[in-house]
Length: 475
Image 1 (cartoon, rainbow, N blue to C red):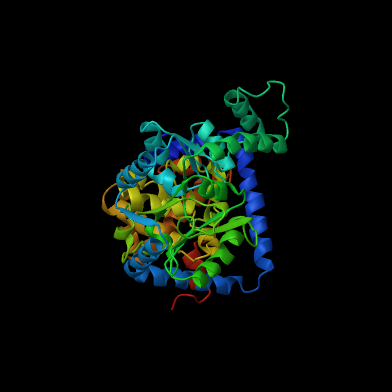
Image 2 (tube, one colour; image 1 turned 135 degrees about the horizontal axis):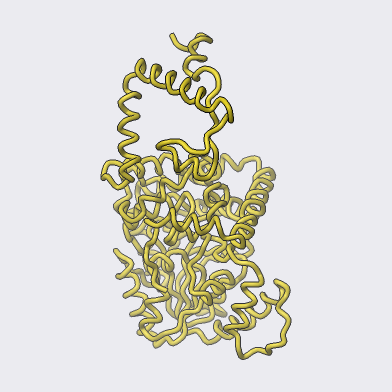
């Protein structure tokens, strides 16, 4: 399915998501499992915060010298017998990958989990060329059957329950007995394993993403809990890696540092079940592996972020911790964000990649509570970056007129402290008097967005500034 950015409709998407009882129930898994498991994993590793500092510094160093590490990585891949292709845009990446699939006469292409392939719409490009693309990650396989996009970057089908998955399996797996029991998750897993095993054996080309690319050795690393990535890249004759340029790290030691914070931040594991290193095609002494090895390095807007106020977003290692801890994501889920990347990281990355004109609503989908920055394993200041996008949205007159005029009016008072104190004192007393009987307002002029869903408490007592001044705070 080709992705069409719908982030301008975030508010409408969010309203529908909040009214979806099944989705709200499913989102409870995000609030409990991920957060509690991460906290437990952190408690067992006293040096976790020091590792986060090291991870941040590794990524900063790499981004500062990215051109050199890209050249070093390419050299090592070629020395190992592989090939490196550079793609400036999603269209170029798709053309390269489809061309390679045709070169190797592929009919069936298996895919490991890859957010980059979602970003470029790779499945649609492969299907349009007359080949079959099969997602092999269980969650990705399920949403492919449903013609949906991932709702979470590490748990793509977290918005579904097992009854929905059973219905989809019965709808698609029509060659299996109708009377089979699929009432338990283990039975669903067993059926998916059997179906996908045939796809693994039939595949001509396997495509994976990469959690990290190591410049020192020309190695790609994938991290999975199912082993599907290993089967995707070792069984077919051709393995294609597609990754964005910021996935580079200098050395194996740097990769090991980042791996220590990745799984703990994502799923609360010390390490994922499978952490697989691939360096080039099969060698003479290897018992398995592909005969052909290609790496596609995608820019797609990343280089324009280097050296700018959004460069820190390129540190992201796609762990999902920010969305796991985000109260907005907990309320609306991933599909409300309208494109590939949901949650706080998506609120920063999406407008960087598709433009603030299309993604400008997303930076406003935040309470600025700071939990995303607190949880980020590479210490990305996500609230600060979202503020930068809000500023750009305001400067380009993309925010609603009411919001712009309201901020302009507020600025008149904010720039004049004495006038601000007088105005707030008068407003406090007027609202306090008007709401003295009920103690709250069910509606207020210019505050309909608030009172539509909740009452506004009536002010009581003196303003904060007045109390602060009386206690000696103002000098």
